[in-house]
Image (cartoon, rainbow, N blue to C red; front, side, top):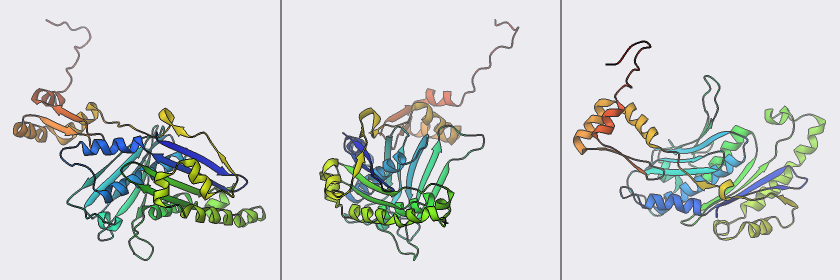
Length: 329
C-alpha cells in the first residue's frame, strides 16, 4: 500500500518526508497500458513521470494549502507534456503525451528540452477563490544559470523550491514499474520575516545561521541514498541506514484513505462542457464523419461517448419556463 512518512530531526531546523507509491503508481501504469491508442509508457518516460508523481505528492504534503497542486513539464522534445495533479487529500492522477519514439536511454533533455525550451511549472489552485483571484504558478527552466541542460528532475525542483519558498531542499527521486518514490529533506524556516527576505542580521538569528550546517550534513546523508535502495527497502530500513546517528521523531504514516491514492476528477459533465467550448459546427462535423463523438480521459482512460442526439442536446438552450400568470394549452 502506498505510504507517506513525515519526520523531524529533534532539536534541529530540519524536516523530512518519504513517499513510496506502490498500488497508486501501478494503477496509473495499468490504465495507460490498457489504452489501445497509446499503449504503455516507454522506460525513460515512465521513470520521469514516476519521479514527477512522487515529487508532486511530497510537495503537496509539504504545504498548508487547501487546493490542488499541479506539476507540468512542457518541452520541445518528443514528450510534449507530462502532468501530475495532487489534491489536498493526496488523491492524485498523472499522464504524459508522447509524440514519436523514445530511445531506451533517453535523457531528460532529450525528452523535453531538446533546444533549451523545456519548462517545469507548479500551479497551486485554491478550492475557494476570492473574486478575481487566479491560481499561483511558478515556472523554472530545465537548464542551469550557465544555460546547460539539467538532466535530473530533482535538481530542477530543488531550484524551484529555493526560488519560490526561499528554503533549502534536497530531493532524491526514483521510479520503476512497481514503485514511484521520493525522499525530501528541507531546512525549516527561521521565525520572522528576516529569513524570507534574505537579511538575517539580528543577533538572535546568528545561531540559526550556523545551524544550516545541520541541514547540510543531513542533506549529504540523504544524497547517498541510491535509486535501487529507495525502490526496494522499506521506510524503516531507509531512515535507519541514512540517519542512524540522528534523533528523529516520526509521525503516523499516511496510507489508505488518508494517504496517496489514485483518483480521477473527470466526469461526463466536464467532457460535455469541453465539447460545447469546441462549438456546434466542430462537434457536428465529427458526428457526420464518425457517427458519434468519443472522448477518452487522458488520466484514467474512461471513454465518454455522445451520439447525435446527445450532441445536439448539448447545444439546445434550456426551455424557458412559462411566465407567471400564463397558461399552457
